[in-house]
Length: 230
Image 1 (cartoon, rainbow, N blue to C red):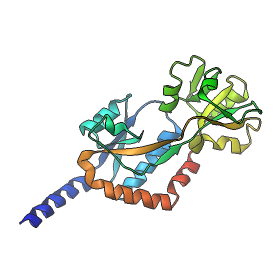
Image 2 (cartoon, one colour):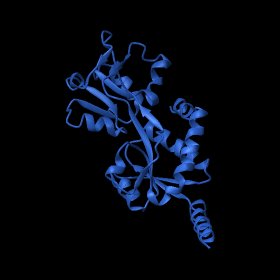
Image 3 (cartoon, helix red, strand yellow):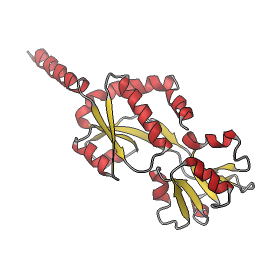
Image 4 (cartoon, rainbow, N blue to C red):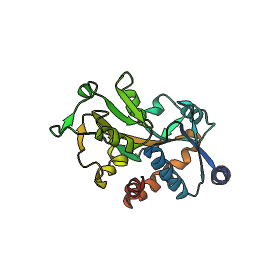
């Protein structure tokens, strides 16, 4: 009898999940290479476990609130620890991207730079990265832009002293040779891992998602997507 009850529960639970499109949300705002990367990765991830997705952006932290309340099924990519505040969210333990922050500059004598020094200069960064807005929230000499190429252009034309980029998603511009005078240097900011979060009502999906992520990493799928981002 107990086996029959478990089977019926499992059957209807799976039918509910696999017969429905899941809603994954994210904070809306300026488009960024990170958003493009995240969407491509999540669509492929869920495709591998037989589920289709609907992706939708919401203002500021509303996406997290919706995912936490169960009005959405999950959050695109976020830093570690979000589930300590939003208790109904489950972090998928295997990270989907590591953000390595680099600075670009015309100053040839520098190899690395710290945040205190950056705060003394004019800087530019991509408007779509929350991490930059938090670090330079009160920095009056910052100039956020909507396109990574604009960062290189502003540095090259001496409109700002430093540009901040995410190496995994916007460092390829240097390889094109257009801005050959620009130098890329290390920034004393620890790399940031990003994770996918789902509402706890979908806890049964966790093993499948982890297995799919492991396969994608073995195939170097994430690196291929990174290289394909313009």
